[in-house]
Image (tube, rainbow, N blue to C red; front, side):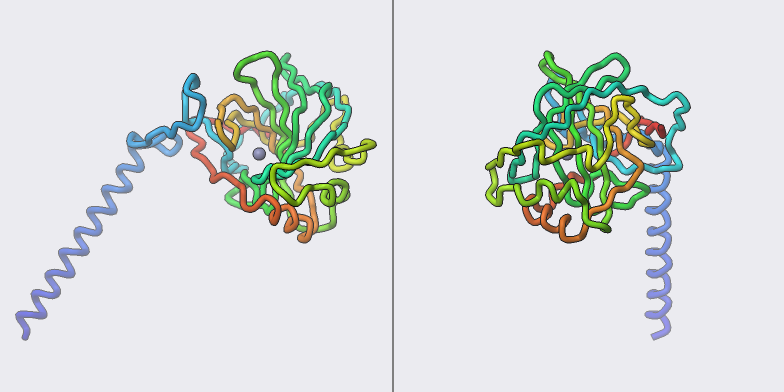
Length: 262
Ligand SMILES: [Zn+2]
């Protein structure tokens, strides 16, 4: 009997030693891989176009607000925004509002044309690990190149007051996927949500370079995530989520990228 209990103690001791050794190995491996470099066994997923260097600058990301780079020289934007929404589309995986051609935003000598804006429920970007119930992407792109450069303004929403801008199109959204409603008489205005003034001040934001969050995951996107959190009612967010489902891509490794705090 005593012999058996001694044997049991020995077995417990051995397994504890093994656990410690395994834990030690794991933390050593983590230390070697570096906190912001991809581990050696990281297999880049073929998310971007074959012609692009793939995989390490993907979006969305989790933005750690205390690990950003404070930018004193703010980017200067020149905005020519007509604010003309021509249609509301139910694409099945998102609600998209299309802009009339002719609105542009210029930053660092590069001019992008406003194309469309669409919603994600829940948010794709996280702030300090926190997710939000909804995120709007205002997408503009350069013209005349095979792979355009993109500029995306991301607007995060929390639950709160009913949002006037969302009310302008929510009832126009077609219930069936792959159909659209034409918007008449400038009745949907992004400026009712946020003011894209010609002075071109986006307000305080985080900036980093990343990718589209849907196929082909092209890594030519300048992301501007606004710091101001906007409000929409729980019912509005639920209506959008019911139409498009949960369409947020999982956060991607930040790797060697820095997020600018502007
Ligand atoms: Zn998006």
